Length: 395
Image (cartoon, rainbow, N blue to C red; front, side):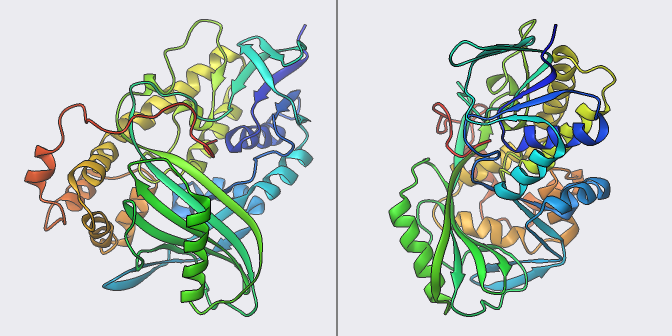
């Protein structure tokens, strides 16, 4: 006898989207969503480009968004560029409200001690059974995987006067290049409120919130903005995969094990760290399955993850160029050159859907890093930083 049809362990983005999709497509199912914290989604911001998802997915996700923009901007020392690609941002509070109202049985402050494909055991010993169990508790240990890090610290602020931004600034690199490739990321929510994040493509995962907080405030002051109050903080560390296989993130399935979702399943963009488009595809795939059980869902999601991993072999090569073959300001020049390419190519890059001609155009011509030096610096298995344990802020 099952307590539920589906148990979603972990209330991060991926499991929340699965719960929302199942509520609409399969309202007959009894779904439990278990979250160790007191709020679904933690305290995070997830963004995506309109071209990262299908029009149907965009229509589904837009009501959850805190903000929707019809363009974006990048800034480099030699130029600024406006792109007409739409951009959307979902925040934890909106996600929590949407999913809580959708109908799953939400259990907050609920920690899972163990699980398999038939159910979970909670801390304290309570057992809950289901025919389908999906583990979405975030990225854990990745032995053997070579990675760099994208790390950030941000402040959401209310200003004394309008900031004047009509669109997000995805990268403002007109700042000192410290600790790798550094840029500021700005999301203008209202005329006087915005999120400003100091972001680094770095060799190490350390985030000194005091230092980065001061840098954010210095950047805000340099724009001529005056802060009335800080309304929230956000920090995170995402993996930038240089080398390795999916099995290092999601070991080969053992019979009777739970399925995996989100970052824990390896479904994320290996250069940018964006995970929402992958989570939306996974939710759609699960909702389309005829019979939902741990084996069928695990098979479907692992196939999705394996396909995504294989399609991103080129991105892992680019990441090795960035982290191993480039030095100092060369990292910024790589992105500065990239953002001069056609908008359609940039959109396909973020969607992890590059064509062969795109891949050739990115690396040939006059790239900032000599291809001869780059290839000479990159052995078959790159000697690179190794992931150690759980990465904070990754769900």
